[in-house]
Length: 418
Image 1 (cartoon, rainbow, N blue to C red):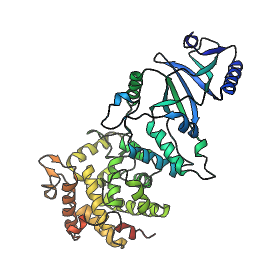
Image 2 (spheres, one colour):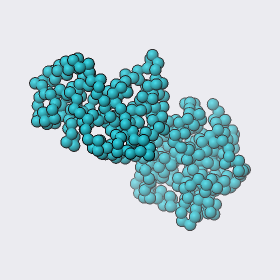
Image 3 (cartoon, rainbow, N blue to C red):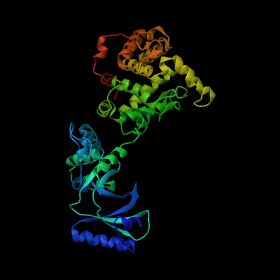
Image 4 (tube, one colour):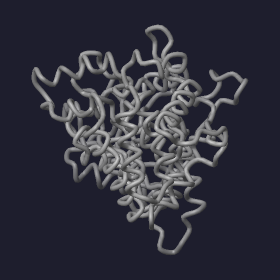
């Protein structure tokens, strides 16, 4: 009788258990919560939902101090930047956000009432008094962000404090075991950047990215949107995150712009739907011209997206710079300069030049001593910028040192036409 062994109070029916919990809450000044009671790893666990207001009052974090002894605290040191980022997300998306469950710890068994029976899992009722405090096993930054967001969301029409979040409560008095629980809970796999770019369409950059991929004859059906790296034998031509690098060059003139800076910059440059649509149209026009005239893009665009013929992509990737992430960044960097000109005919002519006057083969002289050294291709910024300057000169555009000192992300705005 698992529940009986753990000291839970059993009743003849669910109704009786609910009534007993209600009476206990009334007598103690506490609250009764409906919960699911189960065991995992030999321990009693509960799952329920707490309102944000209840979390702030009843859940405490005990973070270690940097340079101190973490074994004396229940949580790792707080990452203030992470708390600010989550808090900002909550404030900006009060009516459209999601937070994963918190894992909490309580060191003594609360009053729990369950129906009698030899169940592995049961619905029950937990009584929590004002004196009951929970600590955080996993989710201290979410908890801190909720408290921070509550300071801003104070309007009469705000429902934030009455919103709830699901919690898993572990009954565990041993601090060492609590530390182990934290380490075990932290063993999660990071989302590949391409998959995150595909899913996180709240970000304007990702919204235009997916439209560009879907609207491009070259990209559509040939982009790997889930993997962390591209297999040498993959028929996909790029990862979604690699195409995203080109788009970052087109928008900000900086493929390496930090992810924390992107939301503000995206809102500045393409924060409105009209600007996003204009940017997508301009980029698809560029891609259409390059795909029509550039080797090997023209040949790839005529291939099926799967089956034997699609495997020709593997050979093209071995021999052409414009089949690499570095090549995409160079194209984006040069296109940023071309897009400054308001004349569509002039821009179209320059894209034809970019496709035909530049030798995109890996062994071409233009790449030697810049991004190509021996049989290796550089992925760092300085060689890529030097290669881009050579490409700019090759298509007849002026090359000046001022290119590297210009304020990134501003000039193309003037030519969007909105």
